[in-house]
Image 1 (cartoon, helix red, strand yellow):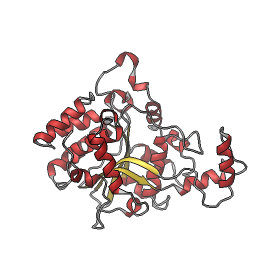
Image 2 (tube, rainbow, N blue to C red):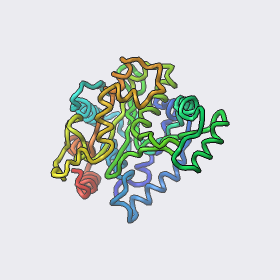
Image 3 (cartoon, one colour):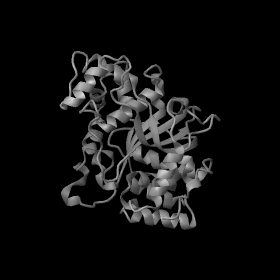
Image 4 (cartoon, one colour):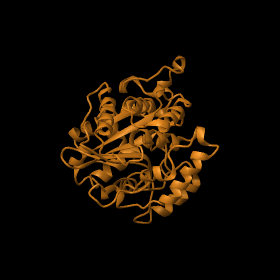
Length: 328
């Protein structure tokens, strides 16, 4: 793989400059070792582990949509991205919240989201209030110590696979928080809580960041959560699979995320998994549920090709990379 050179992928790891496109809610808390991340991806791009690398597949897909990010003001790119995302939300069997970006401000991978202090307090005040609970004895011992410390971490920071940022007609920054899976499933636990699923965690952290811990609930209007997977796994409730590979064994119910994504179309189920958000009323839960979508790698590949978002050798290599993985 010779496209996506070191400098071309740098914008996916750099933080936005303080030029009006930088949302301090996301970028003002945690600093990333950008050079280390870039070096790791460069090694993946040229190394033997390339065929199976999930993060690199995510980066290649975003690169198809955004290129080297030197022309984010391109009307063709903006309209292609808007159509792709609105199609994703409109395919749901229940009505979704669809808004177009008026401008694109960046696409990023390996974004660190700081620990949700609201969730930390909830664990301390409820589950671990009276005692340390965990099936592993060593973790019970660790929890016993944490319960005595006011600011002890129970979950840690969250590593978001991808973030797409833009602006809405209101002029406010808006973001799509993305959890990407190739053949892996979502995680079902964190170190000290064996029942925390990864989708709930990502939505939780996004909601916490965007609303400033619940102080600005109107900001629910300015973000979405998308799951990104191969099309064969997407359930009928989100528009169905984009192909019928392995249809004899029903791949649309072969992953835990298939069940959780379907559940979260019901605002009540989302509320059950995020019980610490007591300030949200029923209207908020409905709105939040409507901002969940399921994007596929195949849809990205189609959008890139249909709109000629890459040119020449880059398009050739992009198509080959995804077709080698049966994603186009």
